[in-house]
Image (tube, rainbow, N blue to C red; front, side, top):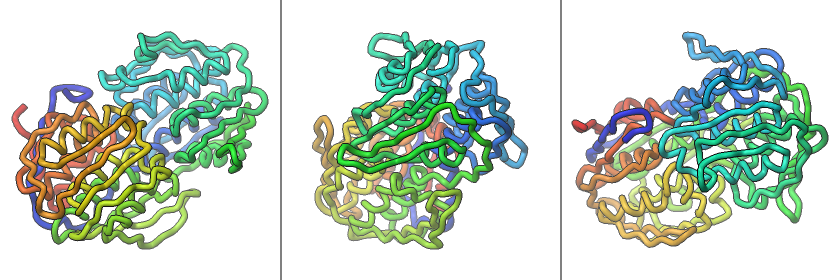
Length: 450
């Protein structure tokens, strides 16, 4: 069932051209961090363009529980009155992070070096996901974590009373882990150092600098070395959140595979640590162009125009690109189904521990719709059938995963027969306007009686 209620079965019926402008929601990664860093600053941070999906709203509730004043105006402007670094109050109740792995891991990091105790929980999907990747490094600061077997939620974090600085090499490419350690390092005397072998999305580093933290990034033979000087007074900011490239992926990919389509997606963040999907699509032969390229709030931004691309070719996706597009592999696998030849995706074991095992979820659904898939622990191959040759007709399990549900809805726009998912409810966690936005472009999405 969906993360917050009764399952909502959905069906996507093959449609005509998708045309028009797709104004996708604000960037989820930047929205989470705006609220958390705003709560750790001294004074009022003002945020416009915030993604108002369930994941981000749960983070806003969490910041209130830690003592920050978080309010929303009728026009969608958010105000965060922060309590300063180390100023979090102890919450009265369990912090419910819903479906958000980003939210819970970043919040755990932000409170881990405060002398408070907090208990975290979430929906069935989040409570099944591994948290040791964050609790292990925050333990080095002096925090303690007690959770369910396998390091799973619900979990109580006892913040460090006398935190010490840490030098930590991230064992897997994960912006969430890196960010949790950096946020923990804010309330620690001295310098906290994080080393990542593969660069991941760098919104935390950019935003920490914007809020006035002393932070440096150096590329070395050992990897990317990030050094943060602790206990700054963060300065409140005015933040305009760019639109989310991970959400843009769905109308872009739908346009690429649906005959006659021409869709413009304005104001998309093109941070190089996030834009791997668009590079990959162009390598496959997609008609995808950037218009009006510019810089806003320190982040590169452009308008994306995506057109139907009938001659897509399967490729081997550069494994070094995985961290910059990890959330986009599900919908890329849909595009790969309509390409000619094999699309090979390697170095993607992180997909096994997202909201669902995304390799298994997509491979199972693609096979049900007539597409052959091979898979291993950290790789999978989609054997493309070419435009017009993907049968469809199946009902796929979404596994409480918003990106799985949206990916199969995109698939159904270009298959021979409709494609359904057992539950489209989780889509609201990241893309609450997905259905009306895609409908306005020409998609035919419907709810079944459930």
